[in-house]
Amino acid sequence: MATGSGTWEYRDEHHDDFGRTYFRRYGDGLLSSIGLGTYLGEPTDSVDERYEAAINRALSMGCNVVDTAINYRCQRSERVVGNALAQTDVHRDAIFVSTKGGFVPFDGTRPDDPGRFVKETYVDTGVVDTDDLVAGSHCIAPGYIDHQLDTSLENLQSHVDCYYVHNPETQLRENDHEAVYDQLEETFVRLEQRAAAGDIGHYGVATWEAFRVPSDHPSYLSLPEIVERARAAANEAGTDATHFRAIQLPFNVAMADAFTVEAQPGADGQQSALWVAAEAGLNVFTSASIGQGDLVKYLPQDVESVLEGESRVQRAINFARSAPGVTTSLIGMSRPEHVEENVSAGRFDPLGAEAFDEIFVSAGVDDESGS
Ligand SMILES: NC(=O)c1ccc[n+]([C@@H]2O[C@H](COP(=O)([O-])OP(=O)(O)OC[C@H]3O[C@@H](n4cnc5c(N)ncnc54)[C@H](OP(=O)(O)O)[C@@H]3O)[C@@H](O)[C@H]2O)c1
Image (cartoon, rainbow, N blue to C red; front, side, top):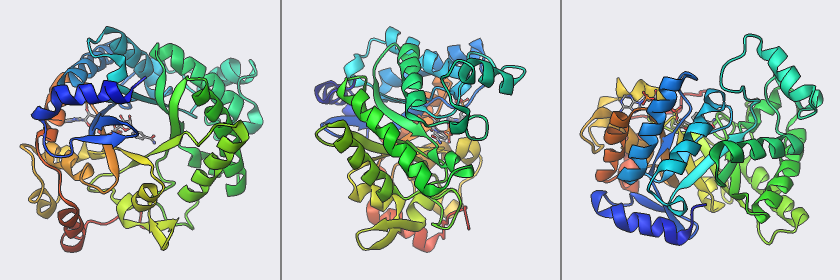
């Protein structure tokens, strides 16, 4: 598990290579503001090999955040992270590892008949109750998440620093909001217990739409309500304070809604997700930080011109990690050469708060969710 002293030592070893605010606070520790994600790529041995080399390179260069999920690449991404952690010379207490549970995962390959695989592997064995299964592929019931966390611990061969409930808004396709909040609270009780047992450091929610859409959108979830449910879960579990610590949400030049859409109830009325997360003392991790590769090809000229970096992708990364309240921008990278380029973006300073705000005033960067 990452520790305060382990991550500070890591920072001391690397911080001369980086610009201002490259390492950022996470509790009593420090995390790199550029992290490695493992979502994309085919579930094949050759992509596994690439990811393993990429993770090793990232850890040796000054990137100590690795994000995965049990369903990514049919559990191969978690297993690759586990192998890389077992092999690297970097101490485990310097590395922050996050994973997620919610989507029912395949095992190594995509089955020919996914419905049958889910039924035989999860429903018939009692791991998933069909009443809790949404869209045939998503479940966040406490017993299921417990089971998934056990599998992730095996895949990773290591404890988990932050465990996310993955895309809880998926449940809204078949359940009302109150039922989803209730289910989250029940599952948070279990995660509080797993944190008290030392299996995970903290937990949170990783979202795609929930926190960046208007409040009348079918996928909307209230962040303050979720934080309140986590506090209630801590009370119920008898833990001193909640271990709910982080959220993940998409953020990049073309998807800036977490900053621009003011739909979350804050102390002074409706605020953006980033604002409310900061008020609640949460760490924010951005996903899709380079638009799942799209921003390598295009950035609006007036935005690109104010960002520092030697290449477009570096400037796109520096936009994401300039947003207020962001701890780490996650970038999927399965090639050591992409790691070299992306982590080197941290040699440049991010924008200050005023310059970041100015982009939205003068360049008209807007949210793409619209309604
Ligand atoms: N809802 C959720 O919880 C959620 C959703 C999406 C993502 N995430 C997390 O956030 C992470 C980042 O998001 P993402 O992977 O979807 O999108 P992303 O980071 O915006 O983009 C990743 C893509 O960009 C490519 N790339 C990276 N560096 C490059 C470079 N220097 N030059 C050219 N191409 C480059 C990668 O290719 P290579 O693989 O070839 O390097 C990959 O195809 C994920 O990996 C995952 O851990 C979470």
